[in-house]
Image 1 (cartoon, each protein chain N blue to C red):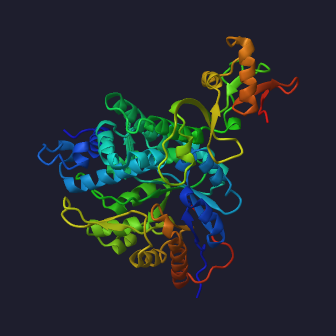
Image 2: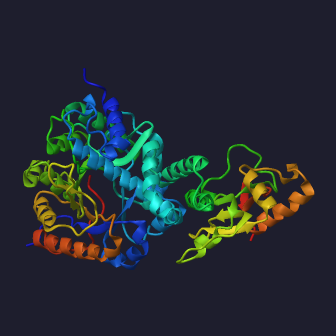
Length: 260
Length: 293
């Protein structure tokens, strides 16, 4: 009996994304009845194109990580395609998958060099902020307490990042090897509204931790240790890392203020 | 002698990797084709660069992520985004590939063929009508290049496209490089394919340059649509032939690799314009851009 087309399409994608197909290890395996009559060599070529396109997106997202991986790249990418099937087309989705894979791998085999996880995390954060919508394109309209004057939220296009190495030198350099200093450091990775260049700003650790908590609008008076937080909120606002709501009487809605 | 017909606009597919180069050469093109998926997934800097082009040069919309051939209902969320982008670009036409790229839970982001049967055509026809009801500009379907075909395909490439376009009124985005590669890889006559198409169905044309792959696991070398090289003369010959029966509004050169040789795009555009002069004569007034799909 003929299979449903969707089942056949799923079997084809399974085949094309399998490591066995990609690396030519399926030669002795029985032919999937769904794919009978299709040349295996051509399927392998198609699989390779699709895989190369996917890895190309990932390499573009992690230029420094790939550079540092050096000769290990080939082995790591092979392991990646063996365990991480493609689930989405976007660069961001594939980059997240790659980072998850690396994190899992590093739990069993320590990263070399040790600062590599920080570099990968920073490159993913840079991609994430580039993909975040502009503030004015996604107003916070889910019925929260955003409209209350003085409420705050982390600005879209900002990510809080804690690292064990100060990896800024990796991104600042134009050539040559750089060994980043080992020290706990807190960053805000940010794409300013008026710029197409991602910036990495060092923050006080407490400010970074507060920034990480500000996913949704919150009344800063409800935060712990109010006196200390007030200073941190001012600090984040001065650096344009948070939004602050204002309500103008008669206007009928909030607008967002970007402290300068 | 000059025929009275719309004169095709000639341009390139916009790529963020050559954004500055494209801006520097904007005057060399009549039109740019925008890949809507770059507006959806490309991130804020890419979106800003694309929308910055609105009003500076005519833009047309093209997609790679609809996966119209997947045997599931269309992704309405994706269509919502396409509708917004088409409006924001002020694009007079929206095109997509007659292909599938994904199934629920898996997305290869690779344009794969569907079985060319009447049942599959009927399913595509329903979806094209739905797209036409959702996106308020003419919709075009593009022929893909394919390395393999499904063994249960019963229609020829041209019959399959003709059936869908005839039933829906959709136009054809004829990718001449894909036609050229398919004819080589699958041993058919590309001129016979062009003769078989419904008269006037071609509303746009894609051109590109590919490569030949020769691997030990292949029975013979295969031609691949890599969008990496200059448009081959054979493809321009096919363009000239197609222009005798069709009046595409736009001719777009695609490039996705070897951007360091972007100046080849200018040569390609010049060679295309020379062929247009051969076939249609010199342009009078503004090129077409909009599609009468």
